[in-house]
Image 1: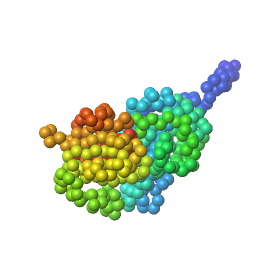
Image 2 (image 1 turned 30 degrees about the vertical axis):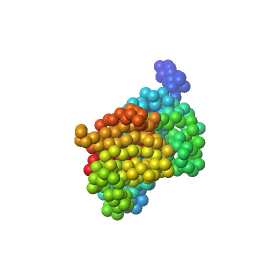
Image 3 (image 1 turned 180 degrees about the vertical axis):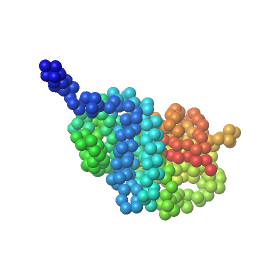
Image 4 (image 1 turned 45 degrees about the horizontal axis):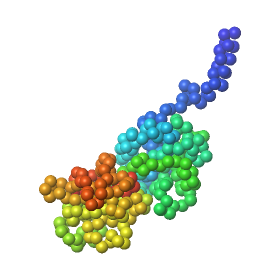
Length: 331
């Protein structure tokens, strides 16, 4: 009788708690480590899936979709998660270098975008869910200013099989996801490439021409910039003691000390950088209603007529509106 009672209680327990949620197969809570592990798993899968011959290829764009409550609880940790993910990606690439002669990603930076939603692809998003969508490049939901195809090729873990699969996703599936700009991060690659690959992205010789006023030889600083929505990078040599960062528009073309960026995410003007002779250091002022960050630190907005200057380190990453990355290097 004792065995029968135990069996009856076991059956009742299975009715109340589905087998998939018992201690043999528990639902993992959404911790920072779990989000990180999902990103790493997605990256490692893409490296195996996308690499071909002697060329190493991997996903560079990642969307991390969470339930809104989970998003709110975890958002302060997103920069740390991204930093840890990038470190893990780099370590994995280094460990695979012996197998490949060339590192050939389609993009030139890793792009991460976090969003909160209750539905994705017709499936509900529960508080315990973490959905990572990866692609070689080009996932930019919420960017209406750029023409994108109706469908994109992505890699994501399929819930039924628990495996990563390559699928076509209709961009309308992202319409229920709140991709907030503070949840976006761009980290430029720093891999050593063969000479041929390096020459392909080297700054044009024309930029070394001493045509601008107050010329300082090779310049006071070099600013490499990457525009995420166009997947485009270039370099700018800062030869003036003060420059303006602005959107590329016809009215700005005749200013010799303007760094013009072809992006809808850049304000007009967005910021100014100057070299302070008295302090012998660089400073930055932001005028944009959107975010300007220096090494992840938010720079408060001021008016163009009354700039508030903040220290700019000799080596710094400047992020404009979470979409345009400037790598600043004093020369």
